[in-house]
Each structure stands twice: as structure tokens, then as C-alpha cells.
Image (cartoon, rainbow, N blue to C red; front, top):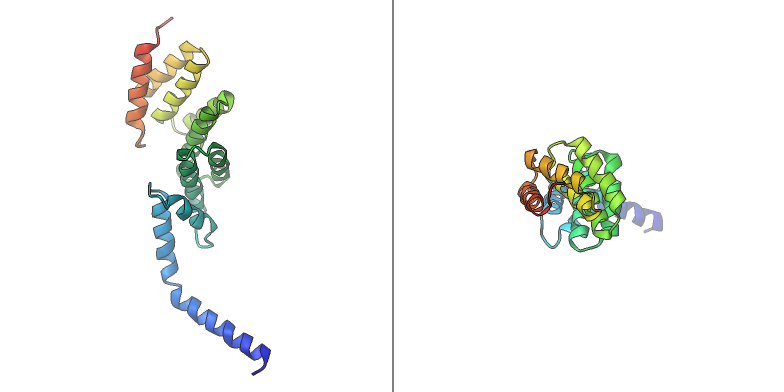
Length: 184
């Protein structure tokens, strides 16, 4: 058998195998997407697979960057988290405000207060009800000694109504810091 014929047969076999598994690919991609957005130990790898999968939508890739960034953040890998949040922004995923808010958190943890404030500003501009973003920005202002701005953000956090799971943290933390921060 000639080399060209063996290659053609091999390519045909690969094409047939690929066709057999084609219906499975979307389900596997959906599983990776759901795992990426969760909190399991394999979530970071699932996010990477979603980002690299040719069948992922722009929306899925954007959300996967946010998810992977959050998983890096939870591992104290702030530079990697910021990179992923930055990659999510131009894709304009549905939860774009999370990319900005989570990026702000990473900047805050790195001590880059100006970048944190800028990212919180963008998150709040996209979602005026983002409780945790107000609280996070208030914490930065408090750290910088800008007490009136901090108190204003903590008060805004208490009035905001967020759809995100960190709303309770945002309100509880804002309340605590308002109680501890004297009015001027």
C-alpha cells in the first residue's frame, strides 16, 4: 500500500471517528462550562477548556475568563486573575460588571488602590445595584483615609439590591464599617 493511500485511509478513519463523537462535543463543552462556573477543584481546567474550545460562543468564553480569573483569585494568583478579567472585558459577556468588580478585588489585594477604584467605578457604572462593588470601593477609600467617600459607598451598598451571591457580604461588611467609621 502506498504511503499516500495509507494516509488517505487514516484521514478517512479519523474523519469517521470525529463524526461519531460530534454529538458528544456540545454536551462535553456544556459540562466544562458548568464546571467552570462552579467551585470544584477542576474548575480552573474546565474554564481553560471552554476558552480553547472552537465551539464555545463569545459569551461562554467571556464568562469562562471571568470564572478562571476568579479561581486564580481564590488561589491568591492576583496577576493571573487580572489578566483573565482583562481578557473578558472586550468580549462583553453578560456579567461584564463581575469582570470589573473581581479585577478591582485583585488590584485591592495587590495594594494597587487607584486601579482598584477605577475598576470598581466601571463595575458600578454597569450595575448601580452591585452591592459588593460599593463595599469594595468603600474599603479602598477607608484604607486611603477618605472617610466621607468610604461612608458614602457603605451607605450606597446598604441601599443597593444585587443579584449576586456576595450581596450579604457586601451589606454586612458595609454595616460593620459604617458602625466603626465615625462621621465627620
